Length: 179
Image 1 (spheres, rainbow, N blue to C red):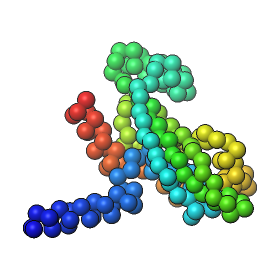
Image 2 (image 1 turned 90 degrees about the vertical axis):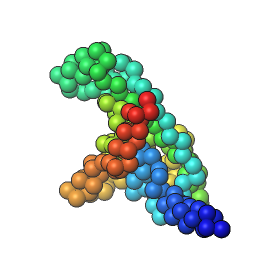
Image 3 (image 1 turned 30 degrees about the vertical axis):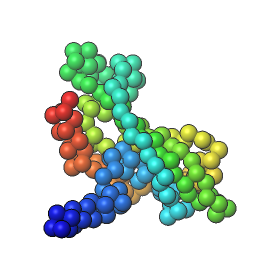
Image 4 (image 1 turned 180 degrees about the horizontal axis):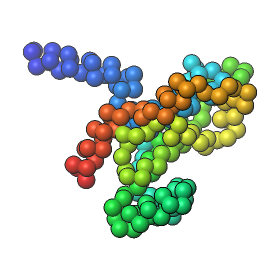
């Protein structure tokens, strides 16, 4: 009986943390934080499911991602020597939200994060951009942001800080240890 009560006592907080998204991958958290403010009714956002993914980046993708010529030369030399292993992280989010007519619309977005060194601890809100899979459904739930004021310095800081540095570091460490 004591074993059963210990299991229940341990499982309850884990279920509670899990239900509020404490174990979500950083890319999903950053994608949602970037997406919600742009919705017509942000409070109506309900995630249905997500599919995280990752794959090694090719040399062509790495070359395309780097903008500055000097940095490009430096990093491509490291990539060719095998010292850098860039990774493309993706998160496919299926969610529903209210549109302008207060109808619930379900749609899917793909979020992408390019990591030059394979780490996830530096994922920030602005480094992950949600791209709609179904543009017609997505356009119904997105508000017009062309007249929004520019972000305040506090907002810029919040959006550029790593979203889950500790969770990312734990994932990075486990990835290094387990291959």
